[in-house]
Length: 173
Image (cartoon, rainbow, N blue to C red; front, side):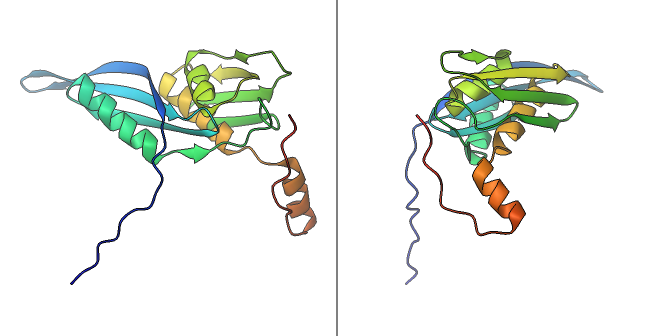
């Protein structure tokens, strides 16, 4: 008898936001074959966010695939209170995104695609600038990479000095 392995993974409630839907036409022998791309961002608003790009022949299927891909790509984002711990810059494709912490009450100052990623990540006060490309897929990817690259300053300094990193310090309120 084979024992079933049940996943004890907790079920998380994610909000999802469809950022962009694009119609793609491929010219084939019989004419044009139309399909759709859906860029979907999922997050819980408490430091977990994921980005996915679904492709299918119909819009609902593309959104469903994008949502599933985004749920598989969820990462924990390091937050310090309502903002991020330090400035970060990331490149994805031709897009470069710069995100900077902001003071309390600033809000999210960012373009549409970056704003969706930052809101669902749970960041409340941040300044974000998209440099170079305005392609939504690349801007979302660059914002996601920038959030993944955030580190605790004290732990990074300890690692660079060769010391054992301390436990997670308490976040200032």
